[in-house]
Length: 163
Image 1 (tube, rainbow, N blue to C red):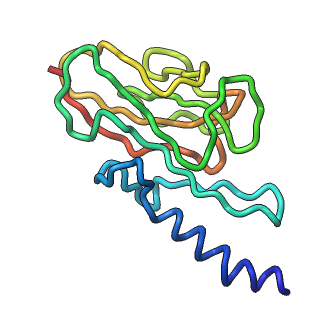
Image 2: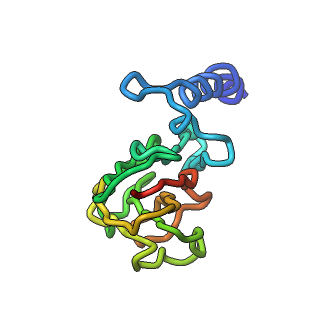
């Protein structure tokens, strides 16, 4: 009972405060403000672990940006560690960039083609040459086997225009 009271009175409010507060190194922008629909919460592995708020987002470009080739893209994640594919570590994974496509089947490994780009080396940025016009971009974070986490850790889908 003491543990439940402690968690209710101290841990839960602290986790909510941390989840809602921007970090000092991150500017507050509309792009960085994730909606509840686009935020995943990793379940604790044991009852004694605190719940971790997870947020995946584009640092650049921003939704609606007009860009030129090569398009520089930088990704950010809060609440999980970025590790190369093949490394099975708790609360970790690597980025997948989805260009002009829908989210894949969440129970299978993320496809690997021109629309689903893997960053299994653990990187968090890329330069891509895209055809002129409008493009949608979305990030999906997946585990060491390229399988999306459950619940899915995904960014909002953004739209950019390439000149």
